[in-house]
Structures are given as structure tokens and as C-alpha cells.
Length: 137
Image 1: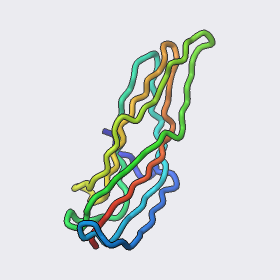
Image 2 (image 1 turned 45 degrees about the vertical axis):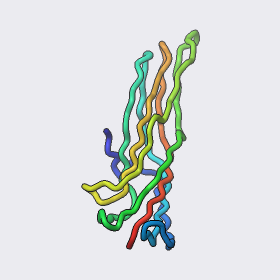
Image 3 (image 1 turned 180 degrees about the vertical axis):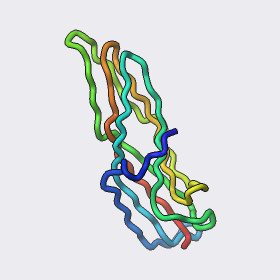
Image 4 (image 1 turned 180 degrees about the horizontal axis):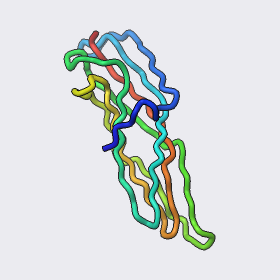
């Protein structure tokens, strides 16, 4: 697992909204941005990587209620010889958002697989994220 440093986040944005529930939640954090990834694979050898992205304010376990997250591929790069068949692909295989007990922040984990074609290459250049977290402040 690769812990993404804050320097790799592009245009991180956060909105704080007052809500009424569920489970005693009174605050909702909405977090959006992009991550510079630069994960590549070549010569028909797939690469699977998990990114861990820490977002939002520091919360205690008691304050954190729940979180959900999504991610989308926003920057792709493919290479191949003039006569190569292009069957490369990049796929998000798992997404999870939860409270991280070490940092106290919401942790978004995004697992993806980069699968290049024979004689070609594929690179995930960037991905975007959207996370919503509920807290009892």
C-alpha cells in the first residue's frame, strides 16, 4: 500500500455542512480532489497498487460516524508499437473509506490494476476522488 503524501494531491477541496443525523451525526465533510499517480506497467505484466489517501480534519473514534468514497480515472497514457495489438486497460478494483486510527483522518483506499498489452505500456497518470464523511462534533 502506498500512502499518498499531501504534495501529490491536486486542488483538494473540502466543504463542511451541518446535518441532523443519522446516528447522532451533526457534521458532514465533503472532500474532492485529484491525485497524481504515475503508476505504469509494460510488456503484458499487470501491476496492482493500492493508494491510501488521508483526508479531512482529525477526528476521534467517538466523533467519527461513517464515510463513503468514490474514485475515477482521470489521466491515462498508453503506448504501443506500430504493429502491436492494443489491449491495455486500467481498472479500479476496490474502494473503501473509513477512519484511520493512526492519523485520526478519513482514509480513502483505492486499489487499481494497470494491465498493458504485449509490446505496449499503460500508465495511470491521475485519479479523482469524492469522499463524504459524517461526524458527531
